[in-house]
Length: 102
Image 1: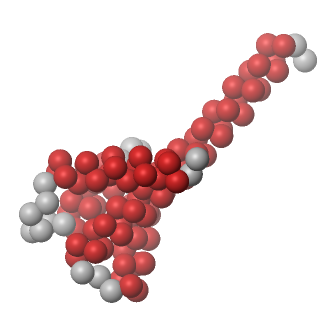
Image 2: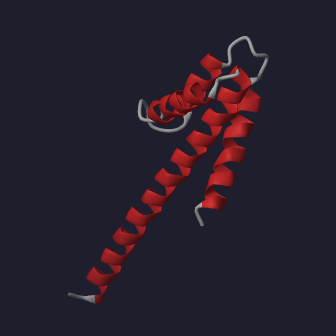
């Protein structure tokens, strides 16, 4: 194996690890956003756990964050929470999740 092959394998491993970390961060972010929305909606503990799972699963519908945003926006309809506030919370929870996994 040449140095180039070794280097290529190293990049592949790093890419895989980076993608796994990103997935974990996004899953943690989705849990946090689910908790936030569940509290706003006044869910009890059982309802909250089910709702958090719904938010986590909603992330598998489309690539990117739009699927989670759309679910949360729909669920918060009538609660006077702007799109900007939802996106801000998603960003805050992403940063919080990133810090908690390092």
